[in-house]
Length: 288
Ligand code: HXC
Image (tube, rainbow, N blue to C red):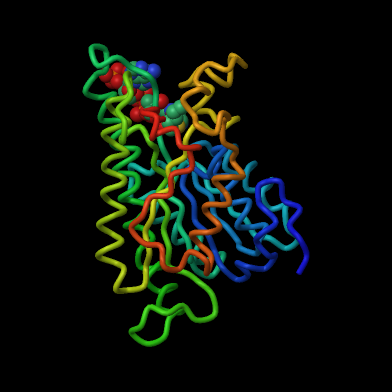
């Protein structure tokens, strides 16, 4: 089996792992989500990424498609996860053009630093709407297709995967909700709800063969979130790294690897869980 040469992926995963599978991703133009999708496409999947900015979505899709000959990657812009109609239209186009939908990454998020004394009700609501309602809408728009995919991958009435995997959703969460972080009341509340949403879906949809998990990235190098919201990377100083037991920032590759694990046969018995990829920082009281 040829070894992976993808910088977003460990060599542990074999090419063709996700042949004939389709991944749908909200927030897919972002640094973390695009790396997750790139890894899946590299391993055989086709993909549909959606986002608010048309140019970004199309450009990132085009770029991801170059990682594997014959890959089909749709980039659909002008999608606001707060509006279910816009997501429904994107899902419909994904299924029509790519033939189905097996995996979902609910990655769209909005955030900013704001003291509670200056955080308006509308600002709080914006983040809740993007992260919580947006995650719910993503689930709602894709669940019939996830059920269909799960049905195709199990023996009658038994949740034993046959011939591959499908029917899985990953919500991108955070670690802020486990520790509390100043200036982030809105995001902490939102991510708690995202965790809870995933847990309930895992219980409700598990009997149908659909799995639901969250990935909680810590401080990941090169991300908009880190450069805008944290100082450690942009200043180039070591500030903040002492609260990460591994003493370094994470990489998007490490998030992509967790994604591939959860979507692969290797992750078939993981359901309702949170995969925290943060170097152990939240255990030091440092959520992000
Ligand atoms: C205070 C703010 C604000 C800010 C917006 N608002 N930015 N309040 N500080 N910096 C307020 C506005 O004044 C307004 O309230 C309300 O929020 C809605 O603003 P809109 O401009 O209408 O924006 P909207 O499109 O609804 O929301 C988008 C957004 C924006 C969430 C506000 O920040 C965004 O889309 N950011 C890009 C995505 C992003 O942040 N990605 C990084 C996520 S990473 P009023 O009262 O005036 O009407 C992440 C993980 C954590 O979250 C990483 C930690 C390092």
